[in-house]
Length: 290
Ligand code: NAP
Image (cartoon, rainbow, N blue to C red; front, side):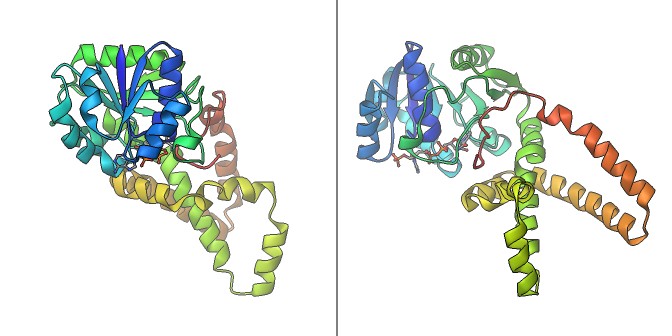
């Protein structure tokens, strides 16, 4: 099968490496000629171009540009496609993407590989990135079953574990475990910075160790990722943040009223409830610095 990839960065490039190793012929399109040249040199694609015409031979195309470039990419791509071609994207947020693209191209399946690194661009592409990592497909009632089956077959060849859910379910789930932690962690850093006494702040910085490193990691990373989560997953992130604020208010109330029994119960409950979230083998952390 000839597989097209548009956007030869971390995700597109890593897909190319893996697909070629599985025997697919990879046709790569990227914006800059240097990126296309590097893709050939690194073994990411069999043929590359800065224009979409080479994709007329593809049966399946992975759309891997940044989220805000997805819709314009599909609009520019359509005149070059065979009507039977299947499109799938790798965007980290699904509902707005599926709503924007499915009406333009009915043979479209939303997707999100839950794997990544802190690096970006073609030099960050690596083989094995998707192995043992979850790969979420988000079909809707209008998604043709043969398109879903083909995308699933190709994704399975990457060594990923496939999950299927609605775009909305995907966005709310990742809001809890990926997007909310970014804003909670960023608020933690901002709160420390609000300390007015410079001597206390200096001591806090010197005392900070592994616990602070863990809890501040995702809030102190690439600001563009946080902005992408807020703008593209606004409602789900808001819903999670409001629940989080309620939970914090409860803790504040317990402290103010010295309600130690309730606080103790709450801390026992969270110790009991954590394992199912972290029980799976650790895959590369998606969309956040490792
Ligand atoms: P990336 O490394 O920056 O790669 C995107 C590539 O697309 C760039 O290297 C660039 O190649 C090309 N590009 C940039 N702007 C473009 C435009 N306007 N039109 C067409 N191509 C353009 O980004 P990424 O991390 O691979 O992310 C790509 C997609 O994967 C995003 O939709 C993201 O939501 C999703 N995703 C990311 C992660 C992660 O952890 N990073 C995980 C899962 C899913 P040129 O050099 O040719 O400009």
